[in-house]
Structures are given as C-alpha cells and as structure tokens.
Length: 119
Image (cartoon, rainbow, N blue to C red):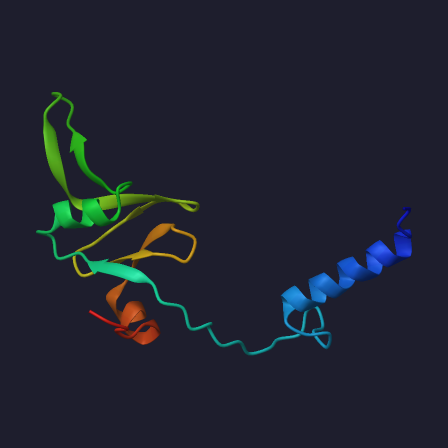
C-alpha cells in the first residue's frame, strides 16, 4: 500500500500542532503557559547530608582528590546535567525530574514552584 506524500505531511502538521498545544498557536506569538501538575522527588541539601543526597542522586559528586592524592568531601557537591556540572549549595534542593534527570534548585525557586504532595 502506497502512502500519499500530502497525507504524510498533513499528519505531521497535525501532530506538531497537537504537541504545540493547539491549532491556533502562532510561531513568535507570546503566550502564557501553566506548568503541568507533576509530582517530583527532591531532597534538601543541608551541608551535612552528603550520604543521603548521594543515595538519592547516585551521580552526585560529593568527594574529590587534592593534588597530593588525598580524598576530601566537597563543601559544594556537583551534579552532572545536560547543561554541564552544576554546583549544589547549602539550602538547595536536589530534584529528580520527570525523565529521571537530577538538577539543583535554589530554595526560593523551589518554594515558589513546588508544594508538598505527600511525606
């Protein structure tokens, strides 16, 4: 069975419009969006809970080696992300995103964006 090129193109446009949100979406137009209600997991870094944070986020770099070869605990752990390694400061939240990715979030942004779903 042969598929018409125009049919394939039309279906592709329909899918793209669905992904964008609506057929009325205009490229370049400024619109308002609401974040989808998703539940995420997060842990609050307090400077003393390196082990718990490392258990939650296995890719978290909590230690390093100095020039003499001695290991030491990082005051600011680092998380590898798609944007590069990001530093975690005391008070930051480490978030596990909807696709399993980890990233740090400043406390004021976390408080403005998230609310407790369950303990």
